[in-house]
Image (cartoon, rainbow, N blue to C red; front, side, top):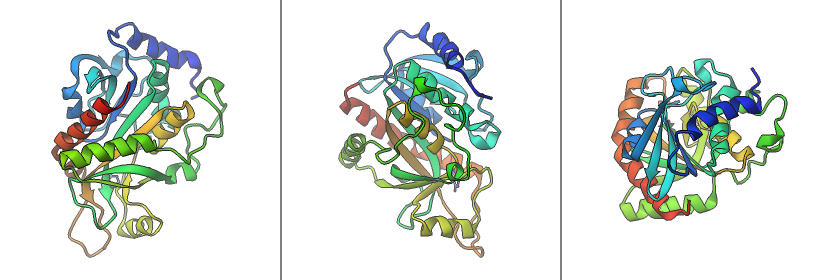
Length: 280
Ligand code: HPA
């Protein structure tokens, strides 16, 4: 399915008519991180069911609603639950929300995800800020920008050199250091899922320079970069990726959700701190 500008406009119109504050920051909350939206003040909640064209969340741990209000100094739209490629949504559907946010005036996108730790220096409960990604799904031919280019949203050929904004990364690093939060910086490998990786796949990902692995983020970030949003993305390390076939460890969705829940207070401190420091 190819969305037209009118499809994005329709969803944006439903949100716009209920807005009471200007919004400039979009927040995508990954698995287990939904409760972060509880810290949004003066919240206005809109279910995805009420938004035409908006993909529903079908995954446990993704509430499926927008929470709109203030966080730090900024007016934010927080997505409690996102659409994943593995749910059967097209790449365009996965990127739908980002284009709607663009039409609503969002200029900064903060994307969170749950991820498996590949870098052996990482521990469960740590945070990793993305400074780059490897989009295996995109490299395999599934990219949200494939199809007729809608020039309203930017050029077809999008530069991905400065994908994760340097200033935002510096601000996040300073906030983390001040709050005593471990914040690594590294490369996120985006895979399709929904199965977790085999040990051989984890060793491969490590060899090519990935520090974390997950099933989201890159698609949304590509759409955000096309419209010129500044992007900050943070992985919560919910589990350590298993790299040996004789390991007794297994990665499960329960582990991912529990790991995410445990990280919420630190992720909240980090993002609130960032939103107090940026001009929005
Ligand atoms: N692999 C892929 N996606 C994930 C993981 C993982 O280990 N943990 C959380 N999301």
